Length: 234
Image 1 (cartoon, rainbow, N blue to C red):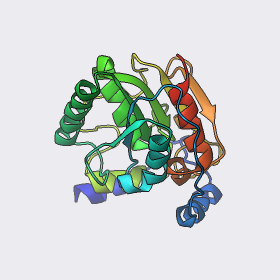
Image 2: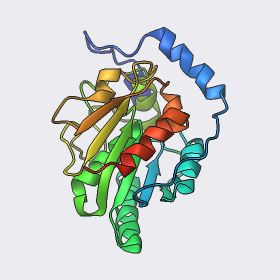
Image 3: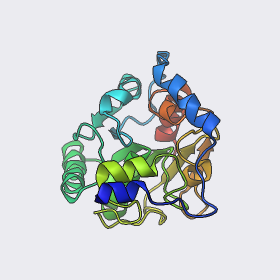
Image 4: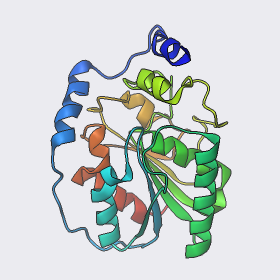
């Protein structure tokens, strides 16, 4: 009954997700087989953790993981399999995992989060800035109204909680105290572009890419930009 009530909640007046034509475009990108390119060697090889989006498994980010590893980075997935939303237990696990990887590599970890994975990444960096070198979000709705997307009802039904009341205390809009880059797309069919771009003060810089929301996981242009941002000096 609670999940049913969450599904029936109205969207706030004046708040909208991306147009339907962009949402339909996501279906085509889901079937598309990503092209493979040999990346240039990283200027600053480093440990990197990839965090998948809501409803996604790390296997969806395999093309990015392979490209980053080929460039010389030490790549780790988040270790939790399918992303079905935050819980106190899985967030505690992630905090410990990032700390353990930082100790293993004797260096802070770069967190690359797709959609909801980026919210995890920002909150981890806010709490453990000494263990995180930077955060790169991809189509992550960290700014504005949490219902400014086309997935909030599905999120509420699956997780059983409101987007306004996550089970983990977090600060979505406050910029983590580490270099923070937001990759966003005007063609995103799931998250409102302004929510993923954010405003000055909510991130250090924003980079526009022309890809779908699903494309953030494996699109060659996105992978190339992630590699550039990992090499950037902040």
